[in-house]
Amino acid sequence: MGKVFASNPLSLNVTDPAFESWLRDSGYLESLDTATTTSATAVTTASTKETATATTITHSLLHYLYTFISLLTANPFAKLTTDDFSANTPSWTREFIGALGSYSFPSSPHTLKLRVHENVKRYARNYASLFILFFACSLYQMPLALVGLISSLALWDFFKFCSDKWNWDRHPVIRQVLVRIAQCATLVVLMLLNVQMTLFCALAIGYVVMILHAAFRKLSASKHPSRIR
Image 1 (spheres, rainbow, N blue to C red):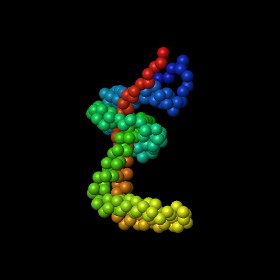
Image 2 (cartoon, helix red, strand yellow):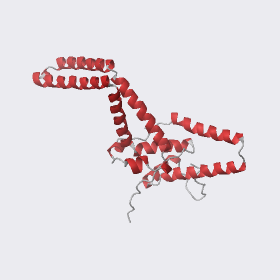
Image 3 (cartoon, rainbow, N blue to C red):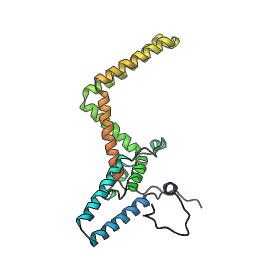
Image 4 (cartoon, rainbow, N blue to C red):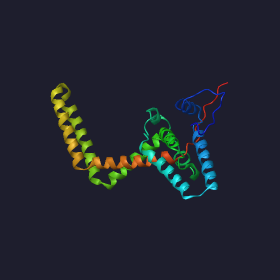
């Protein structure tokens, strides 16, 4: 972060996590992304004007490759909380997708991780909706998995019906044995009809879409908290 903001002898020494937290609470976290991108663009333009040798091009390619590989070490759920799913869903067109200028290659691994962590928090409900959509499409492509899922739900609904009819709650041992049998039957049905493969495909596609969108989507301006006089 020291590359973005020049040191001030009159300022206090604030750690990067504390500074990011203050910017997030103040609603100006996107200033880090903007300042870093502007600084990197200026440095790249200056170096290109000076020399356009193969060494410079190779160095730039290695820098982009290193930044992109840092996606493998980024944990997108590091700062995700349950409160992020209870917030309002951001607009799909204006906020989630945005304009063409809302996307750019991250200038550094730090900027990439900052984008990933913040965008996953902001668009958690959008990503969850996309996962449900991908899972529904996977079930449509694999009808046997859909039959297995419906059969499992029907099995547990039948178990609940029998439990209410014959009062299995009065016999906890018998009820526990029947629950284990129903769990084993459910597992066999799901495995035979490849429901786990459908779930894995939906998770894989959803994760790739989430991590790429969060990495290349610039941090948009959030709603600034109202100041009290």
